[in-house]
Image (cartoon, rainbow, N blue to C red; front, side, top):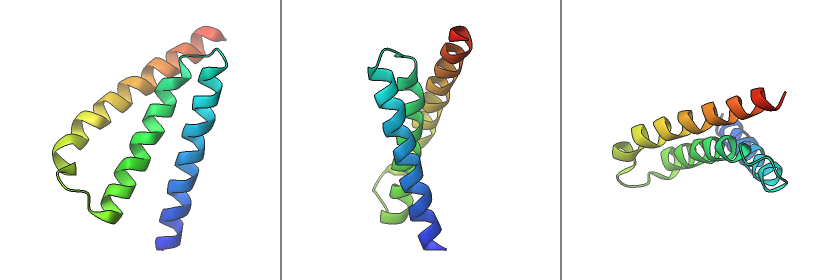
Length: 80
């Protein structure tokens, strides 16, 4: 089961990188999606490697990630 967790983290990271590349190619709204997936990676790694004080900042990071994803989705909708 642990292998699936690392595969999931790897896929989240790849999505974040691809979204960042797209954002740098002129679609700045994709930075929000990249940020969201990098927060997911950070959260997953913090649970595996037990980063200190993570529980106190995660609600704030998840709120920011959700808002960033909302901005990205609005940008995608506006573009189409």
